[in-house]
Amino acid sequence: MTLDGSAIQNAIYIAGECPWPTTAEAWENAAREKLDDGPFGYIAGGAGTEATMRANREAFEQRPLDRDQTMAQLERSFAHVKGALSGTAPARMSEKVTLFGQPASVQYTWVLTATHLHEHLGQLIAYARSNNVVPPWSK
Image 1 (cartoon, rainbow, N blue to C red):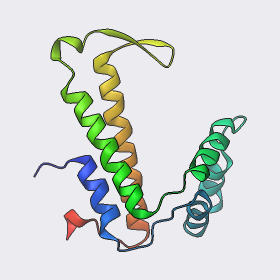
Image 2: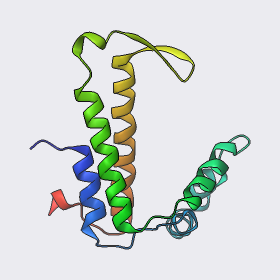
Image 3: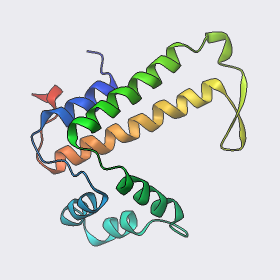
Image 4: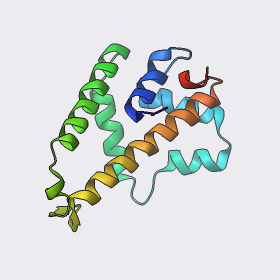
């Protein structure tokens, strides 16, 4: 069976078997309930000056979305990534680009993108399991 990461993520959200937090504060409260002090402090505390964490939280709070809007945005986002990847000619994979100020190949950027998406998938699976939600493909 082939597993499509975006389909798996969407299935977890669509399952509706548990309430998904829709604010940064609600996510933090849910994490506080589930995690021991050490892991919670690591996640909630940010790193360094916490500038990225602060900017992410401000952006998240300035764009409140309900569940249907969130699902629509996820669908558009995955469609964009799939379209961009399928539109990349194989001959371009070795082309050099600048990524985060560093030289990289187009192929490396796609590997990084896939890895990033799998990190999100892993987080969703862990969150679902911590809330006793059976992933749809396990039923």
